[in-house]
Image 1 (tube, rainbow, N blue to C red):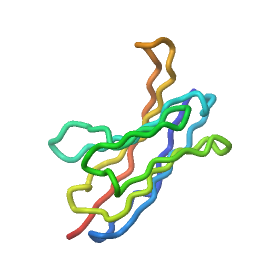
Image 2 (image 1 turned 180 degrees about the vertical axis):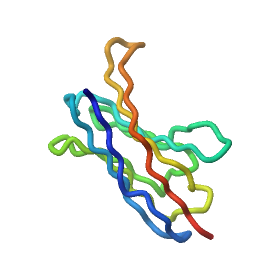
Image 3 (image 1 turned 90 degrees about the vertical axis):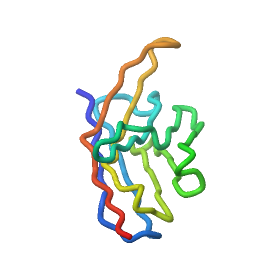
Image 4 (image 1 turned 120 degrees about the vertical axis):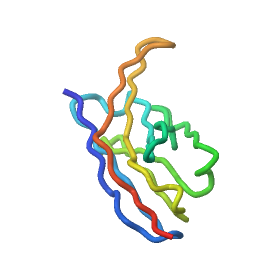
Length: 120
């Protein structure tokens, strides 16, 4: 049974930093592409950052230069370092893992989410 457990969400002032962690169990972590998504109230879930199994990263324009995604395959953990936080970064952040099966299909797994609140 694959499990993703996020941690690190908190209340922080604007300009501050947080680091989110996502520990994955029940599967071979290194073969999964990993991502962080967020969802603010009454807004759709959006991709924040992603990192492939090979280490290629991409970011939403709104977080480029402020957020950094990384992974530690030895410890089955993905991270999201968030700097220069803004009130508009307030959301529930979800960890996502995708195991590619074919070029167009895969297995998707989600964590339960961790709340990030940025005060102005």
